[in-house]
Length: 201
Image (cartoon, rainbow, N blue to C red; front, side, top):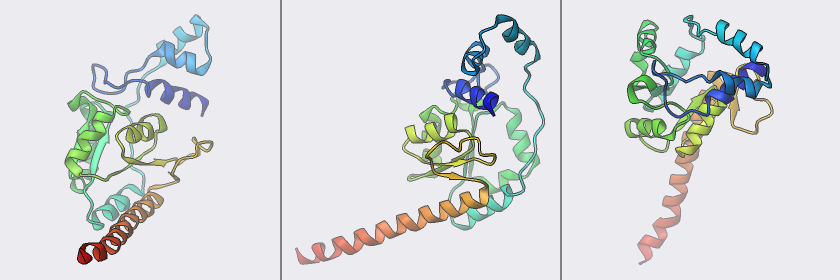
């Protein structure tokens, strides 16, 4: 957990992708966040550090996407990823549930840069809700773009944070439904409050 959080905190400091189109990784900064000062240890980590190419789909992903579509919402994928990500999305058939896909490798921006969230707003509209599992990139980035974030914390990595959190995508869907109803109630309240004023003038 300590290593993961140090890595995410370090990577979350960048707003633009590396040459491959994904998150840059600064080993020295990562080591600093981890509390490592030994040059020998840093060199050893550098020689062993590699990004894996394995991937899988959580069993709540498809039901979540189906649920979002059933609510009549536009669904935009925003991902810090290399060009390979588009192929993976297609392999799992996720593209059929998405209205648009925004990959960092295509737009030259990465989360938490608020500009990449602004691109999603242009495609999907506003107000918007963003569901993501990395606080430093998803939550902070969404807030900077005035998008309401929902932190997907499957493994309790962010238990100390006072954020809007869910344990899985089923809970995320319920939070999105609440968001819709809250907006609907506000619209109804506003209409009720202004209607008498408009008719009395």
